[in-house]
Image (tube, rainbow, N blue to C red; front, side):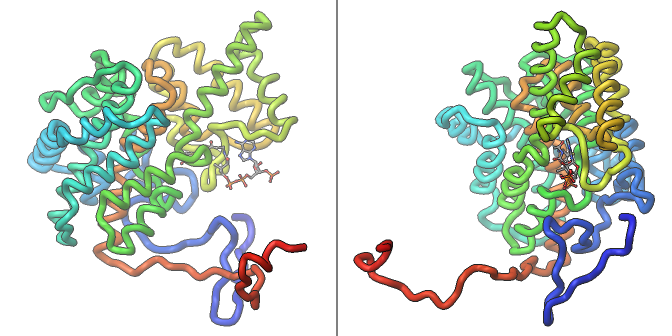
Amino acid sequence: MSQKPECKTEGNYIVVPKGLVNVIVDETKISGVDPKGESTIYRGFTIEDIGENASFYEATYLILYGELPCEEELKEVKNKIDKYRGQVPEKVFDALKHVPVTHPMYYGIYGASLLGQFYASDWKFDPDFLYDHALRLTAQLPVIFAAGWNLAHNGTFLRPDPTKDHAWDVLRMITMREPTELEARAFESTLVIYMDHGFNASTFTTRVIASTLSDLYAAVAGGIAALKGPLHGGANEKAMEMFLDAKKRAEGKGVPLDEYIEEYILEKLAKKEKIMGFGHRIYKLHDPRTDVAAKFVAQLKDGDYWMKVLKKAEEVMWREKKIPANIDLYTAILYYQLGIPIPMYTPIFAMGRVVGWSAHYIEQVLNNKLIRPTEKYVGPSGLKYQPMETRCRK
Ligand code: CMC
């Protein structure tokens, strides 16, 4: 923000900018952009530090409970996540067999709702109860996404293996093959950097639902619905579709993609199209999460090739628009390198973000105030109901 924002009022009301741009709506101790606007802080640590060094279990503990776990705490959280991953109710799998093939984010939206029907009938606002359900949902949501996708596209699915590490097992269930250690760690780090991000659109949605004292499963179903949109989580899929479109055209012209990508981006910009995977409401100079993902992109399949393409795309966007890449540009390529089907990219974002949604749900309900803004009605008034015979006559 270059200049001090003006606070407009109308009578007793505060008028905030459209899109709530630069509006602080509440306090949180979970995560937020650091005061310099250069990174995001996870409970006191930078997102890069945790993304590079923490396991999924450690980061989950940190986001939910507020500190890094000691050995016993880590063991407990790991045991619970692994156990719950193996306990998705059989009826949920049955339900997944009977739904039409649509975008897999729907598996998450109704998967979370279905779990709510099993677990949320006697909902309590006791912290231990809430943390336990947060771990259960974190463990089970990825199983539902992977099973839904593979049932729809391969007619079968892999059952979870609770003896295995969460990230490794989830990647195995999605791709239906055993990942290498490097692949599993790359995948795990993206779950960690996707885990939380202040009051982004889906987290805010989750908090709004939480503020009505609805249950966690319903609140997270709402979060997943918000994440589905291409201006939010859906951008990683759109970014990969863009790269594949550019690759096809480059091949048609016999030019390498890292050379052709400039022309491709310039053409899109000339048509006033947005380049997916670029821009961010908060990071105007650099998204630090891209650094974590870039380290793995460079090490995975065709790493040098993809890094050249990414760097060229970033150079062009910075030169033309002063807009930096965001995390979705890098995870798009990373998931492609792991052989993950493109429509599963946003579900994976949800598999990480479910931890943040849960933490925000708990923070909200344990210190609640119903979130209910006021509108400014600008439509007509004073109209009177007319019977059908006299309506629509000119
Ligand atoms: N490509 C081209 N131009 C862009 C882009 C882009 N990716 N992003 C922003 N701009 C332009 C935009 O057209 C506008 O120009 P003008 O002022 O001439 O109309 C200006 O930059 C400001 O953009 P904005 O959309 O008003 O900015 P915002 O803060 O409301 O939006 C954003 C942030 C993420 C919605 C936007 O940058 C965007 O649509 N990016 C593409 C989608 C994307 O990659 N989303 C993932 C975000 S990171 C993951 C997540 O947390 O969800």
